[in-house]
Length: 158
Image 1 (tube, one colour):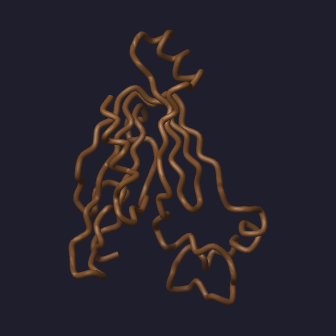
Image 2: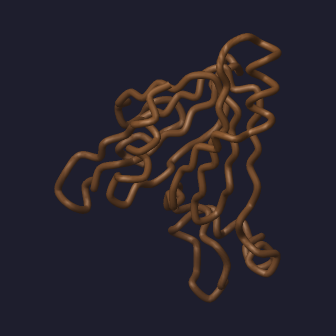
Image 3: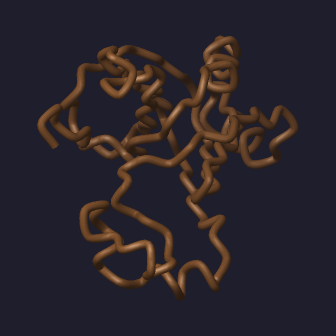
């Protein structure tokens, strides 16, 4: 696996995670990153699909404290149009999380066990956003540009 692909996650300017989850065929895990400035800067946004192939484990944990969750249960926070600042909670409807960074964990015991069991190299990565802490065990990584509207991405008119 080319570790420079992971370095790209950490060197992009203000990258935003706009989707993460298993693919429709449920073997691989994808993380869609907006690495472009987008229309508010007069540019078309650029989206990269990080496809973590042969993903045998995906753990996603919240990084938001219980107090924030307690203040963020109102469904009006699902839409930025109805997210009144007086609600005081986390606005889920922003449809992105700020990417804080990605870290490969070369000494991962779990990756070593899967490598031995399956016979191909496995890796562990931790991806941190402002709301989620994501850990993936996978064998290979492919990165490609995807158009706006790809899969779960919002359409330009949304």
